[in-house]
Length: 361
Ligand code: SF4
Ligand code: SF4
Image 1 (cartoon, rainbow, N blue to C red):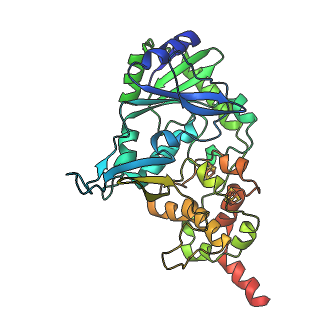
Image 2: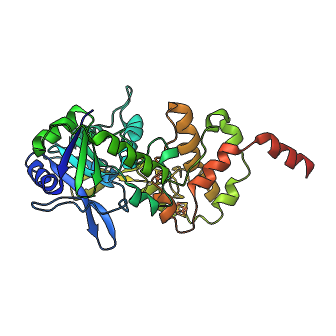
């Protein structure tokens, strides 16, 4: 794919122009952190950021989302008829999304868009969205010791999940169109589509520098060879979960966590059915109506989170781990529970050694 060259002024002009056709979301500084927000007229994204505190998953999959409305008024013809809420009203563009967060969408899609089941809310929003990525340059990554994207299926210049990849080089940007959706965005933005043949070698150098600056990694090569039961029964879960306070932060900040809970809220004779993000780290997550809870201790909940991401998903899809290495759960866990340590323990766990220890004690 060809690379086109854009100066900063043209970049900003193009973002402004694209707002006529898209609802454009981009990173904006809020107090001490950057977050993705819908850009107002004349508002330009602040691209001087490492990554946002929260991933942009909520643009496609809101934390709370009304699915249906209904009336319980017997005097009305539409009594007890559920009416779907139109959540996606126009095309959207997420501008400046990092490659790790972009890869999270194809990962989540494997759950929400299957031949047997389609989550229409998620699929409609996803299909209405164009993903304009911003590669992480070496300056960003050298300051970010918790990123391990290069061992989690992507990298600072990763393209999976993106429609356009932008690469910054000072005040110059190179844009690589990856899909037809990306091509359409570039047209709307009015950026010159003339290829810059001198850009390829420069981009290769920037990419190599960025990739080599990622010093953190996980080992995942053995996960598939383990049996579910040997990992499930491994002796390290209680120790790893000892300090976990089940706050759920790790799941809420994770771009690849997709669990939700459905509930009804009624006001007088009208009601809404909504869904809200849920977390496998919450004690109530699996509580049955009978009161029985199959995961009533915190190590069982922590084990579920890591077994899902690093074993069940790996076995089911054979597409790597359900983690993009963004590092948010590591940075924000109040008690320093680190997915890299747990992943490496799972990857190197040998049940035979464990049986020997038990037998000899
Ligand atoms: S953020 Fe840390 S303490 Fe909170 S639920 Fe996750 S692992 Fe436990
Ligand atoms: S598990 Fe942690 S590092 Fe992996 S994608 Fe989720 S928040 Fe990022």
